Image (cartoon, rainbow, N blue to C red; front, side):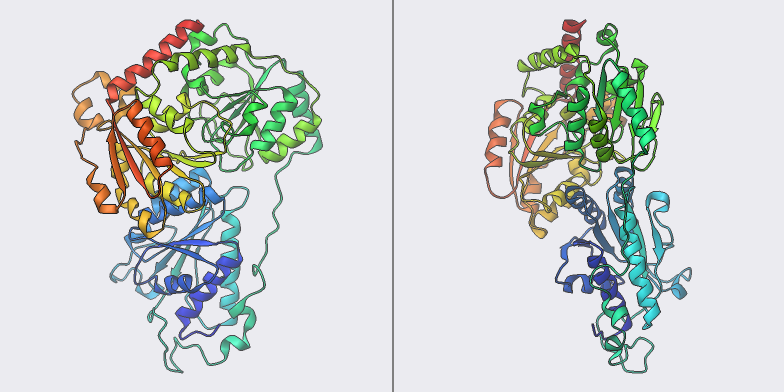
Amino acid sequence: MSAPNRATLHARVLVDELVKAGVSSVCVAPGSRSTPLTVAADAHPDLVVFSHLDERAASFFALGRAKRINDPVALVCTSGTAAANFHPAVIEASQARVPLVALTADRPPELRDSGANQTIDQEKLYGDAVRYYDDLPEPAVEDRTLRSLRVRVDRAVTAATGTHPGPVHLNVPFAKPLEPTAVPNGSPHAVPEGWTDDHPLAARGRDGPFATTTAGRMALNGHALAGLADAITAAERGLIVAGPTDREYAPELVALAEASGFPILADPLSGLRYGPHTADVPVYGAYDGYLDERVTADWPTPDIVVRTGASPTSKPLRRYLARTGARQFVVDPAGEWREATFHATDLVTADPGLLAVELAEELDTESADWPEFERAERIHEAELAGTEGCFEGGIARRVVADAPDPATLVVSNSMPVRDVDRFAAPRDAALTVLGNRGASGIDGITSTALGAGSATDDPIVLLIGDLAYYHDSNGLLALERCGVDATIVLVNNDGGGIFHMLPIEAFDPPFEGQFKTPHGLDFAPTAALYGFDYVRVGTGDDFADAYRASLTSDGTQVIEVTSDAERSHRTRESIRERVVARLD
């Protein structure tokens, strides 16, 4: 690994170690100070490079890709506010436990706090949102420095992918020259001839990571496992609640459901609402539409609830669990408290998949049936039959019901994820459903979806609202630059439709101007700007036909569905009231 100057050598060693540590792709935004990293990444034969013009879009693209492959993706940017534009995605990655490796190029220490152009304080820029931070040493042609660099890279990737996965931040200072320009011998930036051959361990590293970390899985000791198994065995009836998750535990939790007899209340982002297991164990998905206090007041209460993943999307479900008074076991491998009603009784620090398998082997029990849930699911489905496709919730239902098998579906925040949660029924299909529920923002949704699409041969479907589409419209550039095709369902209700769910709806002004904020934008011109097919339809059969046509077409299609936010909200309320009336 010969190099024309020390910055080039330093960047090549860093990128080489990233790949050896398990990073296979990187999103790069152009900039001067990051030139050594960009050149090294572009030249590495085992690294897939995605080029983005916008740091925020790049970071959310990396987030989506990392979500889909469940492996770390690297990010590269120049110094200054470029690094600050990674921050929203870093926060989401932290909250959602998604492995990212942010590499922010920086000025050398002597130029910091000096008024030098494009220089900001990048020390610990992302605060506690990262699992690991390091201000790397300046490039130096020194054996120990380069060995240290490799170890630091390995430590960062290990932290990003550990028991508590998430983003890490390496701040990388470079002095000029930044390009792979040869410098005269004797220059402080020169790499002496033959140096890399004389120092192979530093320059070329090892076959595999320079420093390997052997990680275990968090497991309960025998006494604790037996205690939990005894509690489940003693319970007359129980529930498994699967919230949004950063890992795939579906087979193990299905085994626990079979062994315990507990049904699964599956968030659409849990990995459990969709799949072949839905034919083998009870998986319920309509609970958001019927877990009303008027309905559940006469239901038997569960004795035990086993919870995995983050807090469920559904507020009615969260409130129901709080009302039951059941013993609730929140299982989290990182030992974090992820239950904001503060009614859970037990925090179990263990790997959910391993714990589920071990419990299934221990259990010898039969739980009482839940005919109440079965009946409620049937009634909810029946009430939807007459309104399907005629409001925003019907669109979400159709998107999931008609998605190919397999497919990757990315669902935006605000109303789309709530509509999928309430109206999209469990299905025997290999659907990977993703969303940014860590911090639940509407920024970067399109880029997240296209990043996920870059990581799979599955058809990619994005369900998104108009404000989120507007917010990340520049992310659409990745369709061509990164070679991703998608079906994008754009539900346009002209503003913040979710605010109709809040009490502020009754106060106008300021509701219309300050909360719903209608924009009146025509999104059709984005088709010409970014090069895709565009069609505008209403709800109902027109949408169903356009959606099915897109799923069998090449390229990207955006299907804009125009809707009335208030009318859709009233329809949601009406369906819920009819379901509750039939169950009460």
